[in-house]
Amino acid sequence: MVKISPSVLSANFANLKKDIDSIKDDCEYIHYDVMDGHFVPNISFGYSILNDLNKICDNYLDVHLMISEPFKYAQNFIDAGADLLTFHYEAMNNNQEIFDFIHYLHTNHVDAGISIKPDTPVEVLLPFLDDIDLVLVMSVEPGFGGQSFMPIALDKIQQLHDLRNDRKYLIEVDGGINDKTAQLCKEAGVDVLVAGSYIFKADNRKDTIEALR
Ligand code: DX5
Ligand code: ZN
View 1: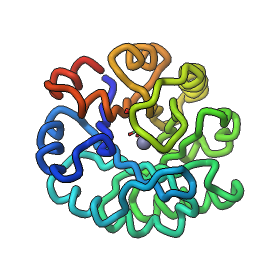
View 2 (view 1 turned 90 degrees about the vertical axis):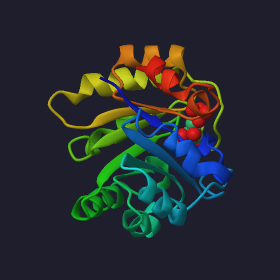
View 3 (view 1 turned 135 degrees about the horizontal axis):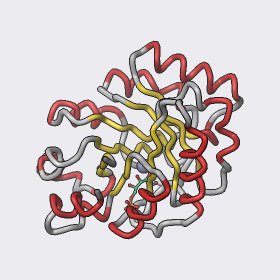
């Protein structure tokens, strides 16, 4: 069954505990979007809020780093309780740095995820597919919640599904997920659905999460 990862970016930050309590028993993951105003044109939150979040839920903390120089800040997010650190392919300098970062995360007992923006092809990930725990396919330009789903993501999910064979990585999709786009992603072979506005704007979040499955 598909895993659901509600994106905290769409929560009410002044009522974070209440919003987390409203979803934590119905989903497997919690998606935490870190934005630096440099890699993406928006600023969200850093590791100190993750540290607080870690104390109020037991969900798998799925941290999406939309930042330049992710390696530099990784230890802070690991110390704050991240279970998975997903960095952007586009934020890295070369393949060796990516291999080193994956190794570093595994040495620190954290899962390693790699993400590609809508214009980046799946082929760039081929060298890393044996080592990575998760591939995050962006179905919007990273930076903001509430955007429309880009169908190019479906081809990428299908491609990653076909490439998997006996590899272990999960395929996650992020951006514009609702009951309709979720269905298309599942047909293409997705394992984890991130959804922000669709879940947090709903009156009944439990039913809304179930509608994605
Ligand atoms: C966008 C973020 C997403 C965002 C998704 O850059 O990475 O995780 O919260 O929001 P929705 O589900 O509203 O498109
Ligand atoms: Zn995200």
